Image (tube, rainbow, N blue to C red; front, side, top):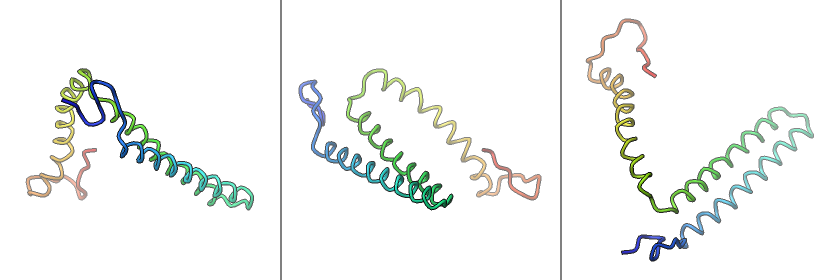
Length: 123
């Protein structure tokens, strides 16, 4: 039985992943170009806010880098270590979710006890 992207144990990239990766690279370079233009214009005119906007725009490209890393990681089939890590992480995430939601849920359902004027934040 063959999985998507895999033929007889050998990895083959499908067209959708290739096209998505290509678009992410294009958008990354466009973002970096816009960031460089904003920062350069701000540097030439002495506008600190334009320089800051250029730096801010460079962080927009970071989302593309994260997308490219995600595509790379998703392209490989999971191994035994990945499955074991996923099984051991689930209970920890469940505990964190319970801890984060118990305060707002008790406030919503009226079971919270308030000791001060403002609600306490459990974060």
